[in-house]
Length: 286
Ligand code: 3HC
Image 1 (cartoon, helix red, strand yellow):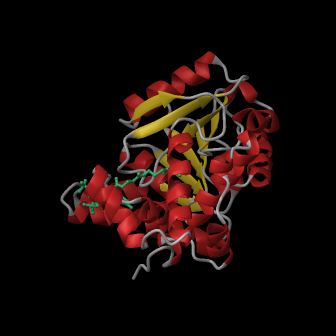
Image 2: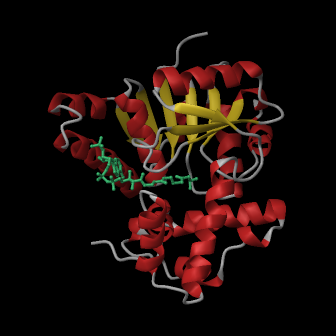
């Protein structure tokens, strides 16, 4: 089977732009889809500014940045995915949106061997496979934020994913992208979010109940447990809308109160306080 050289990424937000960057830095040709010209421009700028940051830190040369950017096309035309050998869907964490995308992309892909994946962390992969009309070549490939930095990728085959699809993704993630794959079953949250999200929601509940300030809750975990960042700063980094959406999906799946988003999180999302990406969450960002 041909080596994967042409990748599509659907969604150029935090995760989509990070995945675009990872693929392009590893020499792949990447087409990234956004919903509007403004969003496409913003996605391109996110990739470029992250590459410039790596250049400033001496990790990439000016030529590396130029060549990497030449491998990236951001467009609003979903049909541009037609010749892709791998598509990673990283649209917002909304089941209806993803089901619709999988149905459309399933009919656009022209390569019979092409693999269609989702970066979802909580929506059943088996449903996405069924919507796509090519369920044996669909699976979950879950990256972590910031994607260029975090080494882990969770691989989630569904009941209908073929063993060949899983094998191709295992070698793609480790050999082509240089990341560490772990495998998880098709249950909301997989491995990492099943452990992480209840922890983040507990910290938000603690903040809501007035146990301590946001800064002290975070310092507690950074200085007391050696975490690279505290739970409220991490929720801000992930995006409070995303944390909320994952909690809702996990609560729907397991009906465990620990997955249920606390009211203050709902209110913050309703108010547009989405964390780092909106400029304000538990902390302000300048
Ligand atoms: N994009 C690209 N690169 C970034 C970055 C970003 N947004 N933020 C930091 N980096 C890079 C820096 O360029 C630097 O790279 P270098 O070592 O090659 O020079 C490296 O990361 C360290 O950066 P800094 O020194 O500026 O900052 P820190 O040392 O404070 O690290 C951090 C920042 C990497 C974000 C660190 O705080 C961390 O690891 N935090 C935890 C992140 C985490 O837990 N992520 C998982 C979230 S869960 C998830 O994504 C799943 C989803 O489904 C919710």
